[in-house]
View (spheres, rainbow, N blue to C red):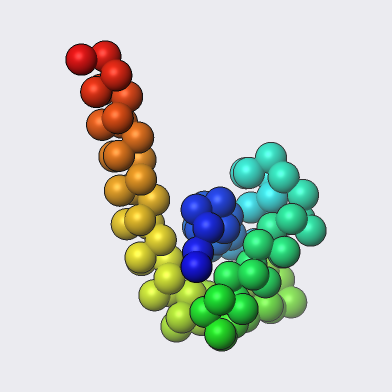
Length: 89
């Protein structure tokens, strides 16, 4: 099972191009980002990023997860917006 926080973290790593930069974006620490990515990789059963000397590169599984994670996070955002709108009604 995927946790939303892990998916948010994954998207931040993917889009920022590194664990340290993602930690900065998320106002977190690199060890927390690494832990979340390790948990996702165990869930997927494959590496999501190639660790390079200078940064990272997504694997095929990482690219696939990114496309789905963006959609899931967008839908969750839409749901939150809709529910806030219902409270006002």
